[in-house]
Structures are given as C-alpha cells and as structure tokens.
Image (cartoon, rainbow, N blue to C red):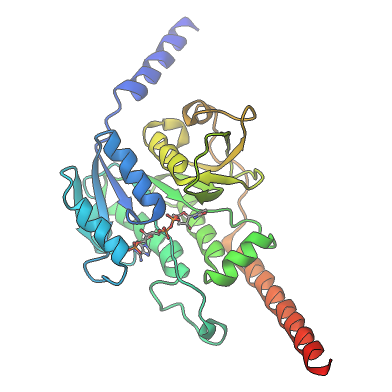
Length: 312
Ligand SMILES: NC(=O)c1ccc[n+]([C@@H]2O[C@H](COP(=O)([O-])OP(=O)(O)OC[C@H]3O[C@@H](n4cnc5c(N)ncnc54)[C@H](OP(=O)(O)O)[C@@H]3O)[C@@H](O)[C@H]2O)c1
C-alpha cells in the first residue's frame, strides 16, 4: 500500500513539475478562444505551431492582423493551411504531441440552404466541424507523434433545446455537426487520445464572482456563462493532465462556493467516457426535425400577424 502511494506521488510530481509540453499545435488561433489560449501558452513559454488560413483568405482583417502579430513572436511557428486540407494538417502536427482544436464554422445560414445542397461549401459546419475532424484524426495518425487531440465542441445532444434550435437556425446547423465530430474522436480506430470540452456560453466577462464546475461523460450541467480566459486555462491544464485522456467534459460556472476556484482539483476526479453516446445519425435527424418544426411555427406566426395587420 505504502509502495503504491509513493508510486502515485512520483507520478503526480512528474506530471506537475517535470511535464514537458514540447510543441503544441493550435487550430483556430485567431478566434476569440484561440487568442486567449495563445496568450496562456505564451505566459507559460510553450512552443507553439498554429494553422493559418489567412495566406489565401485576407477578408477577415482582424484575424489577418493577429497572424501578423503572431509572426513577430519567436515561439510561434506558422503553418499555412486549412482544416479541409489534410496535407497542411500533417505539416502542422508532425512534431507536436498534442493538438488543441479550437476552430469552428462561423458560417451564417443562407436562404439558399433551404433549397439547395450546400455541403460542398468548405465553410459549412459539415466540413469545418465534422469532415475537418476526420482530416485531423487521419493527419495525426500519419504523423505518429500527435497522440492527443483536445477539442472544443458544444452540447449537441439536446436537439430540442431552445438554445440549440436558435444556434442551428442562424449558424448553418452547426450543433449536430459538432456532435458528429465528437463521435469521430470518441470512436477513432487509431488509438489517438481525445479530450472533448463542452463549455457554457463563452464571453469576455470576468468569472470573478463564480467558481467552476466540471462533469465527465458529457453529463449535463445547467448552462451558464464562462469566460474565454477560463476555458483557455482549462485547455492548458488538460495538456499536462493524464486523467483527461478519453473524456468528454462539460465546463460551466456556478455561484461562488458551489464549485471549485481552479481546474486542477476538478481534473483529478474525472473519469474516462464509459456511457453510451447516441450515434450521430439519430442526433442529426432530430436537430433537423427540431429546426423544421421551429421554421414551420415561425411561418404560421408571421402569417397570422400579417393577416391581422392586413384585415384590421
Ligand atoms: N462561443 C461560445 O459561446 C461557444 C460555446 C460552445 C462551444 N463553442 C465552440 O468553441 C469554438 C471556439 O469558439 P470561438 O468563439 O473562439 O469561435 P470563433 O471566434 O468564431 O473562432 C473560430 C476559429 O475557427 C477558425 N476557422 C474557421 N474555419 C476554419 C477552417 N476552415 N480551417 C481552419 N480554421 C478555421 C477561425 O479562423 P479565421 O480567423 O481564419 O476565420 C477562427 O480562428 C468553436 O468551435 C465553437 O463552436 C463556442
């Protein structure tokens, strides 16, 4: 028993103090969360490799300027590419142990989506959140070095929740495709470890008067606001903590006193995924049905209002 405790202590000391981060690959470094995460890595002097898609797409001036700034930092190596381009992902991951995937589709629903098949659009969530994850897993396997993917997703398991319906309505059905991407990670046949984080509503606000709550197995916690900075810190903690491998973590804030003030103590108690996660086909169909009902009811509502306005 004593020997076991000493062994556990040595492992703890190793991971706490002697963990070598190596190089960390970051996808989505220009996003709101991505910027906070890069700041966190910089604060800890970690070497970083980032995926940059602003060598071909300079329309987003804000992101373009951020890339120019990253270019001035010595610890950041920039790889041109896109989540849809598998070769660029191999180039990104080839000398990294961990990849933190913070990218997400920010495509707004188009009117044409209701009539046409838009899945060839590379900005669509089906490509960015789902096929992109497939590319990422294959690329990681090709490198033989990158064995851990940390992915920021969202709770896509409740298709009939009002928040999901609204996000899907405006965001090109992003939620079910995020869930489908999660499913690929959970069931990848290459033995690549994953950590899926489902955060609350991320904001720039300070979490000063709140504490953190974490649940494993993707279990639901009432949705709350959580700062980008707190989730960036959680991602950083996940890199060095062996407990988080093959887990799905829901991360929220709760009132002060009801949770923990830091992530490390919460991460010590998380368990690997061991519950049944529904097949994405079932989830995707339900999301589309929920959206169909929403559109139908909205249409009836608008029709009744117009009828009322015209006849009275
Ligand atoms: N915001 C929330 O409350 C919330 C809640 C739950 C989960 N999430 C998830 O958390 C993640 C990050 O959120 P965020 O607010 O930081 O998002 P964001 O600001 O919209 O950033 C998205 C990032 O993804 C990158 N990206 C988009 N398409 C790409 C592609 N084809 N290839 C490579 N990179 C691509 C963007 O790069 P560019 O700069 O080049 O466009 C950007 O860096 C997203 O996956 C989101 O779904 C967000």
